[in-house]
Length: 629
Image 1 (cartoon, helix red, strand yellow):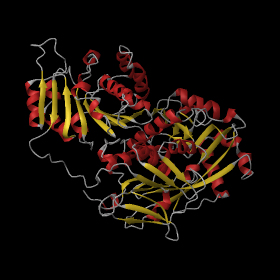
Image 2 (cartoon, one colour):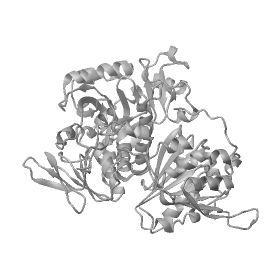
Image 3 (spheres, rainbow, N blue to C red):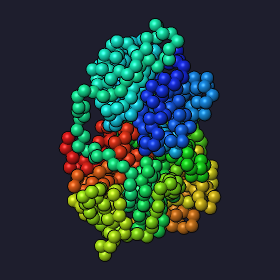
Image 4 (cartoon, rainbow, N blue to C red):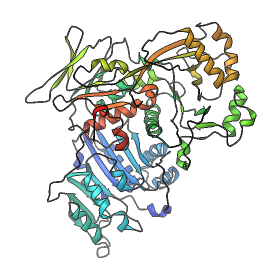
């Protein structure tokens, strides 16, 4: 879905002073005191001053909620430079504006989740038509800011259909504030179920408080919301068991712990990231397709989420590097959409002379005749490498998580209770209870399928992969950045010995769950390297011919996929046995999908604003193989 903008308002359109009217008009910060979460819906992000002011109020309030959600629509986002320029007039907001600008990029049409304060302040920016985008959300706002204050067409922006869309996102008692109070607007709000509390005529009272519209959602009828059969009843934080200490399990544990859950992570291995997440280094790059497929959009959402964690919790140059990735195209797949907008170049673009010349100079891998605008290569500016184990360790360090290793889980059983939530018990092979909690998340990769002895079904297929890696002995034959397209090559990442290493992989064997290393796969990996980077392959030929040596090592792991190759996220069980969830089948994109899937699972669980469009979220539901709308 690409945006064809027909109107770009001038910057002066957004230049309204920061006013406390929205916060005061909605009773903030007093209204959120002692709440676990607070959800703000804003129409018209503009230059972000309302968001920054709300964030600052949250930050300065000792009684602030654990989590602040701020959902804002915007048809035509301004540049990061414009955001910063306006915030510079307000010194108290400037430090927060710097953080906002650092993430303000790649805003293609649709939803984008930006995270701040170690993911306790979540901004969901919705780019495009407000009415359509609000239908892609599933939450109840506590507060509404009507902030399209200077629109040349108030009647269009606050039309009855938009007001009804806003009302659908409200609960009884949601408070609304705005800075305009035309008769058409107040009538429309009343018809949508809002009770007008205050309106001031600024022309008659020029010195009055500019917050001249306050309302509360309190319709005289019982609101009817569309039934969401896949949306379980929202739960309050309690105890949670996550089975699996890899990328998926760590991400889910972190998302739930931030929301107040007491999380116990169980894993059969002796430490974290010991399964498929033990890969020495992994590549992060968006998936591209001419039709901007669901997988392509999901990969961008996932990359944004992963990079946000990496940049805030990991060490650049040691644990990760946003180096960019060059994708060589050996067939017709992986192209850009025909009308790829400027915002998309943050993610991917056709490779230019600079990238191709750098690759050819280092490795001789691109023919001189290919150095033209039609060369079959993409440059993923948002790509790079990251160490999975470091990411897992950072996620598991979230307060509220306790990890237990060398624990063999054999099954689950559910015990209902008349006066309170039921309880899940995790059993060992002798049917002894290992741990118990109100919520269980299955995140053990392919092994998750064997734990659903409760009637739930996880259709998982094992995918074995092997990689080769070794020390960099001649940097002159290494590309200046990672390259993928026929396998993936990471040219220089620091190992535990602090020396630079390279990695090439990976094989892809369906239905194979063996983690044994074999020589045939090493030969296959070298064959891929010959096609991807011929000069680099020639320089490493002697080491590969010698087999598995201290110079070239091999690693094998097992990933798993679902029948449609998309992750399985969300509730598995029915109302009689609530509290069984899954997060698995991340395939070869665990680094791209894990953090996003953890947030999506938490959003399902708490009826929060979704981090992605509802239609995308539905496509990942763990129960979708037997779910019918």
